[in-house]
Image (cartoon, rainbow, N blue to C red; front, side, top):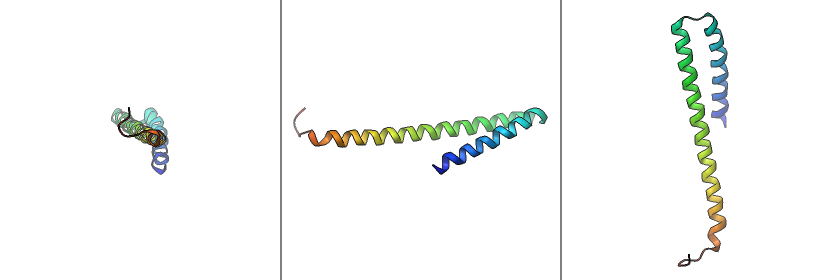
Length: 76
């Protein structure tokens, strides 16, 4: 959970900086700011995807544990 809050703080700082750079920065600064926002956004998406994958696996484990006791070897 700490990682997600760190990424949120980074995103907020980048967005605030981007607003200032968009208004006062050079073309190169503007481009770098857009690249930084893109990288941060991709990392947040990767983090969310990884979190969703963990949730899916935990749910699958719960379903398997509930279903497994009723199964008998050799029976479909």
